[in-house]
Length: 206
Image (cartoon, rainbow, N blue to C red):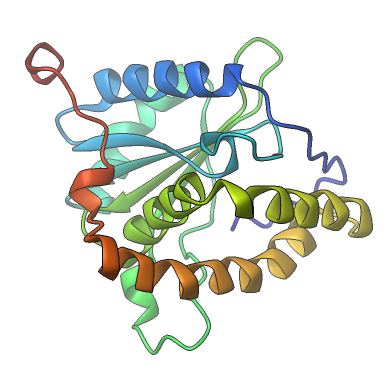
């Protein structure tokens, strides 16, 4: 999670327009960054119907090589108002003995009065952190009864902590709990990352 020290931490109720805006953003980013971006997905709370969220869109691109992607994406994203952050490590779920090197990423952010605010996560395709983001989203989408409780937790937490860094540190273990439940669901249903990716038309791939 980005350790932003900004005190302006606001979690708002779900806006149905987020779904449409998320689709537009992922399509635009994919068209901008392909073919190095193998796919771009709308992830995070704004991608879950009914979920309260910070009004910031989390997008995720899968790439083959982070360093190559960073070099190629940097000027294109800068033209769109994005800044590369120093955050290169995702939280490894509690209880996992996985090598933290498998959980690296690149993160760009955009904060603009004219464009939607975006966190753009670039992760290696097939990596555990890419998979976790998609599984978290899809489990919540498949279990709408869990959404109000998680949304309420975030709203209460946002009002109780001074900044986004503390918010992220407290929220990470709760995400770990969701993933602990989501993993058996993934095995039982046959959920796969490939099934979680937005289909692209042949025209979009050309």
